[in-house]
Structures are given as C-alpha cells and as structure tokens.
Image (tube, rainbow, N blue to C red; front, side):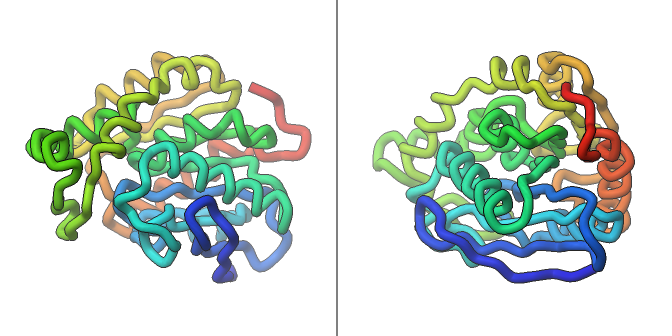
Length: 258
C-alpha cells in the first residue's frame, strides 16, 4: 500500500489530500469525505482508506477548505462549499487518475456525498457512515446553545471536539437551505448506510430516514459498539472490510447500474 500527498486547486484555494493506493493497479478509485471539523488525517478516514487500499481500492481523502492543510478560512465555509470541494476532488481524480466509482462520507461528509453524488456521473456506489439525513441536524445538535449569539452578533466562537471554531450566520442559513430528501430518493446509485446504535452525536433516526428514502439497491449495516468517530482501529478495519465486500459488484467495469 502506498500513500501519496497531493494538492490541487479548489474553490477556496489549494485542497490538501492523500491518495492511499494498492501496490498494484487499483480495481477502482474512491473518495472519502471526512467528518465535521475533522480532517483527512482523522483516524477513521486514515484507516478506512488504508484498509480499502489494502483490498485493492485507491481512496482519495482530502481536507475540506479551512480544515487540516487546505487553504481557506473555516468561518467562510459551509455545507455548500463542502459539496463543491467534493466535486472538485472527483474532477481531480478523473483528470489525473480515473473517475471515482465509490463515494464514502463520514458524519456531515456523508450528507455531502449524498448531495454531490449525481454530479459525479461515474459514481456507482455511495456509503454513508454516521451521517445526518439533513445538514441542519448538525446545527440543531451541535450549535443550538449558540444560535442566539450567532443570530445577534453574526458569529460565535464554538468549541467542537476540543477545538475552537468561528461559526457564522451564513453557515446556519446555508445548512437550512439544503433538503436532501429528494436527492436521496433520486440518488440512482447503490447505497450502503452504516450507523452505530450507540452514536450519541448523530442518532439512528437519521440513518433510518436515509435508508427509507433511498431506492434499491440499498443496504444497512449496524455498527454495534462503535462511537461516532469510529475511533478504534479495529472498528475502522471492520468498516473498510464491509465496504469492500459490499461494493465489489458495483466497482467492476461492467457493474450493474442502480
């Protein structure tokens, strides 16, 4: 398995990424979109991508604008900019290597892949891990006690996962403008929904809603005993193995269309 550091132009400046690839020719390429306020180097992204690479799938994991090593100010970003970053990453893969057939998103990154999937025509399989069914869920769950301050002052300093971030009113308003229900219902790709019953950040109701809205082919895997961040290496390895086994029929060059 090889890891290559990459950067490419994005809507807010350079996007920093890593491509985890098998030693031989990949059987397919995929993209991993990380969780809210995380980075491409968070344990889940790193070990799921590397696990898939060991099983023959090359995975591009990248930092959303304003996070990790990517350019941009996080306070100027929002769910819409996340979607644009993801589409830009797919464009880069298409031009430099091969178009991604697999899209994987963790937490808010999962909502982003649902929103972006139809803009990546070559994508055949979509995986959500602990994803909200609506980006505004993140606002209500993580930012509720700060919403009055944000509305009154235009922004607030919010501590998320032990770090401070500036959250502006534009982020809140942008999240409210997105309705993923139609996008999920008309996804047109095979879908794997993965969710831990014990997740105390994104509730199981979100995964159930995504699954119910989606058309077949669709599958649901309960990540029993795991936390929201998939913070144990053995759990990330399990997730990678399940994704690899589930997606194999969709990643072949003659894969059936959903």
